[in-house]
Image 1: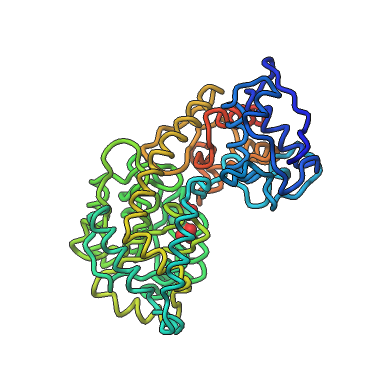
Image 2: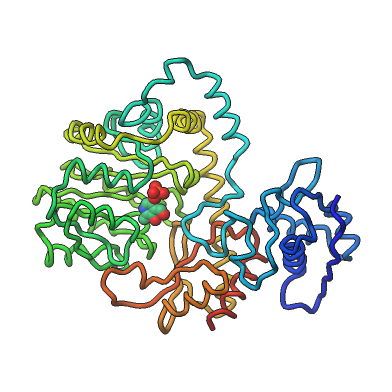
Amino acid sequence: MAKNPSLIVSAHHAFPRYQQIARQLKQAISEGELLPGSRLPSSRTMALELGVARATVENAYGELVSQGWLERRGQAGTFVSPSVTATASSQNVAASQPQGAPLPFQMGLPALDAFPRALWARLMGRRLRLQTRYDLVMPEFKGESTLRQAIADYLRFSRSIECLPEQIFITAGFQASMRLAVRALAKPGDGIWLEDPGYRYIRPVFTDAQMVMHPVPVDEEGMQIDYGLAHAPQARFALLTPAHQSPLGVALSLERRRQLLDWAATQQSWIFEDDYDSEFRYHGKPLPPIKSLDGPERVIYAGTFSKSMFPALRVAWLVVPQRQIEAFSQAAGFLPCTAPLLIQQTLADFLREGHFWRHLKKMRQCYSERRVWLETALQNEGFEVVPQAGGIQLVMRVKGNDRSLVARARAAGLAVQALSDWRMIPQGEGGILMSFTNVTSAEMALGYASQLRKAIM
Ligand SMILES: Cc1ncc(COP(=O)(O)O)c(C=O)c1O
């Protein structure tokens, strides 16, 4: 057992007691007073020593577990993570986080503490044992057939999309999906409508393909289709996040979905529907994906497991119209699916055996709670949070230059992002983007919100 670090807890401190404990433990680990792999006193013993409730110590331990500082080993107790390296104590949160642990507000991550890793490991072990010598050959370019079937079944139930497994192409992430689609359908000089602000990390795919990007502004009904029609009616593609616009979180209205489909049918253009984050909606009825309304067959539908499972999986998929299967198969010959077979097979089992469904149900509950914690904490600190019906990120309106505010927050180790950095044309309101997925308690939310206020207000 680790030597008990001398902790002090005060009722008159700016931070709640559990955070005082968590901070001092972090410091003790950073400074090498508590060594990697050492066992901490039980929460009962620690609570008695500090004169606090056991739940307070449990909360502190829980927070450090979710941040990767500590790990629980069942009956054996709670230990300092072996992977944590002692660093000099620092005011900068980023510098004192264990490697790979989510930073406060970090975007693009699901709740890392909530993924059923033991189950995943069990399914993967079983799969490995069940593999035969024939699983050692080159896998299918378009992805493993059992996974394509499982995705087709999932889409039918959850997104009202009817498709055959042959229409599905597995890829190693959304960017790989877009590279495949562009290889199959585009030529240099083709125009593409992009949401502005929008997902900036995808733009290099279109630059590489020498396509012409047309920024189309977004309002409270999503991409302004009228603007696209007026400024670039001849474009051959449109890329959208209709379920929850990334990053603003608004849904594309039904009327605009129809307008977009009409344009695509008339122009013989293609709609890339990035159904990003559609799994997470907390109130209101979700609108059907454009793909489910796609009579003219102009929609290439893109999904990913990065947020519904975890990003390190690197598995995403496309659903293409039947008439395009050949073009995409040829493109897949040049850009074959690189997701390892064992991962694809395990994922297929995860879906077919109902674990995915259960996991999503749990995550919806978890995120709706965490979202309220952070939203409430930010509002308590005087921030203006823009209401959103779904997704895994929040937007706050801010006055002044959002880039310089964000630079200050980042210097304090808070991983927020500036809305202006997601725009193609500098215009419109400033904002701060952030995620709540790894905020594991109401107290943690209060602590983060207060750190943000101190850093930028
Ligand atoms: C708008 C949007 N689409 C798609 C993705 C999924 O990307 P990937 O599958 O490469 O992880 C992300 C990830 O953050 C995203 O923000």
